[in-house]
Length: 560
Image 1 (cartoon, rainbow, N blue to C red):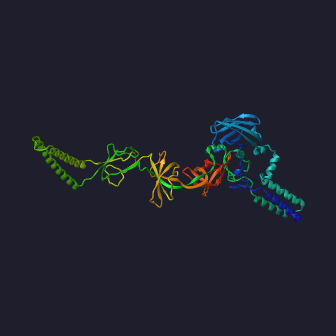
Image 2: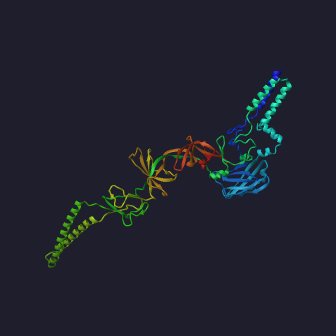
Image 3: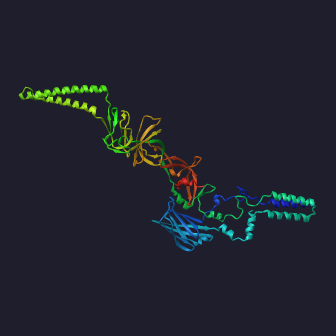
């Protein structure tokens, strides 16, 4: 019996010593896990929506911040008149910012309770009445501050927040020894054994003092304030809570989806080419040495008119050619001299009637022809070939240098009219010329193009198709790569959305964000197909009449 009592007393000491909470060491946290993102609540708020408007009222420090947006587009509404009916009476809100934010004094919102609010909104020719309920709950931090010391002590004990230090362990040890001594007569050897075991347990018990980098005192008073901060965050179910101020910073815009039928669109690789009727190449007909015109060669980007001289080419003359030309010149000079003498003799004979006037005129015509041939031969040796612009436009390419020996196959200048450009695409499917098409550049610019024709000869197992760029072609250049979206005869049913609405995740899944409530967004996986340069066709994943984010989806995807 006595042995059993001694054992129970010793066990009680061991249990009380071992029940002390183990203190957190450096880099460890043995306390309560931090609250999840979803557990962090925002400031008290109320939401209301009508066919035209969406409203969010947030209670902060004795006033209401009211955010008014268009329901369909999520665009802030500025310049509206908002009157709020509260338990304290009817109060008009005043514009706080130019981005659709309004302020309203609300000292009653500092007291916990449920408040029914009626908002009367007038914006332009639209007027709506919206109702909402503002639920202001008791602040847990403030409630704990007014609790009694005994209640806080009980709370600490039940939550294991009251640490047992070395003093409490020693008290438990003494109590256990006294109880054991009162119940039985221990021998000195038995008491020494108990004390030795208790000392070992006390030494081996973890120290409850704070270690380096720890703070076992009271928590930071500012820590509880985070539950009143409006921070964008992702909930455990994947939905996003994005407060209205954050939506304004990110410029979030939405659109209501609609189901419709569209022609199936295919993507074609293409590049910008000059209009064949408004561009040209400048080449020399014979090889020769280049020389600039008066004022020098034209610079890149210089506008020239049709017929403007861009360069001169002086053909080289070989030594044998020079000898032949000199011989020919001598023969012509001899013939000219003979004809001149004949004409002089005919003029004298014509006065006496020995030679008719017809013979005299024929001799003069022969002399004129010989002179022309002699002059042409001289010009061949002295005058270079003038290279003129075949069309009006801008100099897009220059391969000319003074003194350069130009070859007939080399393009010296390329003239392009920037306002008249085409797109050459390669298609593997037959296209009809009556279908619409658009082109998209690498920078995201969308071009409207019209079908011009398709070739019959295959090029790289594809057929070249030409489109003309309609509208403003400024900023485009020949050779620039584009993607052409051309319609086919096949029709598909789906929802057309801007390409910026679709976000691709790390696993390659396409998704869009549905605006389910004023400050909540949910990611919806979708399957899309190309539609044109600015839109995609959603064939599955969302239904019609759904509010989908059309601007800022990439920024929402970064919320964690």
